[in-house]
Image (cartoon, rainbow over all chains, first blue to last red; front, side, top):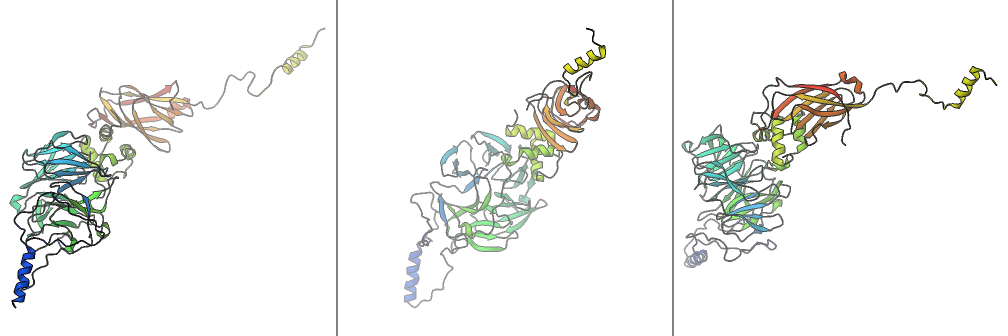
Amino acid sequence: MTRLRLPLSSGSGRRRLPGLGRRKPVRRVGFLSLALVAAALLGAGVVVAAGPAHRPEPGPGDPTTLFLDGFGDACRLAFDAQGNLFANDQGVFYKVSPGGTRTLFTDQVPDPRGFAVDAFGNLLVASPRDSALYRVSPQAEVSVFARAYNARGVAMDLDGSVWVAAVDSLHHFDATGRLMEKLDIRTKGAAGFGIQVSPGGELHVSNFASLWRLSGGTPVPVLQGLPPRNRGFAFDEDGNIYWARDAEEGDTDRVILYDASGEVLHDPIIGEVTDPCLITFLRDEEGVTGKRVLVSLMDGSIVEADAQGIPVDGWPRTPLSLSDIAQEDCADEAAGVEGLLDPQVRSFLDVLGNNNGSYDVGDFRAYLLATGAIQ
Amino acid sequence: MRIPIPSVALLLAAALPWSSGCGDDPGPTGPQGGILEVSLTTPNADDAAMVLRLTGPGISQVRASEGGNYLHLVESGSEVIVVLVGDLPAGGIVRFSVPDVEAVDSYGAAILEVADESNALRASLSGYEVDMAQWVGSLPD
C-alpha cells in the first residue's frame, strides 16, 4: 500500500530528494486506487467501513527538518566528544563535522554493523562476519579490539566498559578489550541486536520487534510484538525509550516514546517520518547531549525533530571521554583528595592503569601516558 | 707633641664609620632560609610514580630534583603531598625551600605509594627509605 505523501506544513523545510536510497519493496500498493474503489463502492450504496488512518499524525517533535541526505542506508549513527557525526552507510564510514563537512572516514572494516564511540574517541564496530569488534582510531587506523561471535550491536557503559550484543549472548569488555563477562540470553527468550545502557545503569537489548531489560542477568520484557523492522532504540535522561516504528500495512510509521516500563508516553513523539530505522541524540561540539534528536530513514536521509517538542535531554548527557577528565582532578585524587572523580571515572582509570580495583598513583601515571602529558 | 692614648682612641673612634651591626659582631643571627632535598633509597630500578608526604613549617617552592619529572602538590597547613611521576632512581627526588635550613630536624618525609613502569602499585614499601639534607644551589622558578 502506497503511503500518500501529504504536503508538509509550511516552513517544515523537509524535502525528499529524488533517486536516493532504497525504496521499501513489495508493500507499495496504490492507495489512491483503493480510495477510488471505496468511492465507487460508496456511490453504489455499499458501505465501506473506515479503516485505520494512514496519514502520519504529528507529534510534539514535529515538524522534522532535513539534517543530512546523500547516504544510501545510514541508519546507524554515533557522535564523538567533539560533535563529529559518524555514519555507517552500507559498510562505509563517513565523518561529518559539526560544520557539515563530510569526509570518507574508513571503508576498511569488514561487514560493519552497530558501533559506538569509546572513551578514547575510537569507533568500536561490530563485525559478525569476522566475529570481531573492530577499533577504528580517530586517525582511521583499524585494529581488532575484541572477539565476539556474531557481534551485532555495541554500547558504552558509564565506566567506559563496552557491551556487545551478539544475538544469542551479550559480551562485556573493559575499556582495554579484556573480557569481563558473557551472558547467555537466547535460552532465556531474548535476542540481542540493539543494545544500550539506561540512565539507571541497566542494560537493555533489542531485536527487531522486542526490547528487554537485563535484571540480574535475566532478560525482562519491556516491549514486545512490535513491527519487526526496528534497528535500535535510544534513551533520554529520564530513562524513557525512543523507538522507531517502521510500520506494517494498516499502521503508520512514527517514533514512539515509552517510559522505562514500556508504557506509552507519546504516540507519536515524532510522527512525520517515513520508514524510520533508528533514533540518535545529537552531541554538540562540547560532547554534550541535549534535546536534539535525529531520525535515520531507510531512504538514506536523516531528519531532525523539533527540539522544543522533546521532553528532556538525551542520555548519556556527557558520555565518558578521556579528554574530558580533568588532569588536576586526577592528580588531586592520586594525592588522596577524595570526591573529585565520579566512581565510574575512577573505575575507568583503574582499568586503564593497573586494574587492581582502586584508583592509585599507578593509574594516574597511565592516565598521563594516555593523554600524552608524559612520554 | 704627645697625645694621650685615651684621646687617640677617641679620635680614632670618631674617624671610623659607626653603624649598628658593625664592629666585632661575627655575623647575622636568627634563621637562615635554604633548600632541603629528599633522597630516596629503593630496592627497585623501575620506580615510575610516587606519592610523598612532606611535613614541617614554611615549606615552599617544592621542585622535582630531576627536571623532567611531573610533579603535583596538594598543600594543607604544614603538610604537602607530592605526586611525582617520571624517572625515580635512588638519590635526590624532591627539593624545597624552608625558612630555617638549620632546623632540618623539624621536617619530615614519608613515602605513601610507589608504582612501577607498568603502572603496577608496589604491594610493599619494604626497603624504601627517604632522607633529608640541606642542598646547596638554587631552585628553578
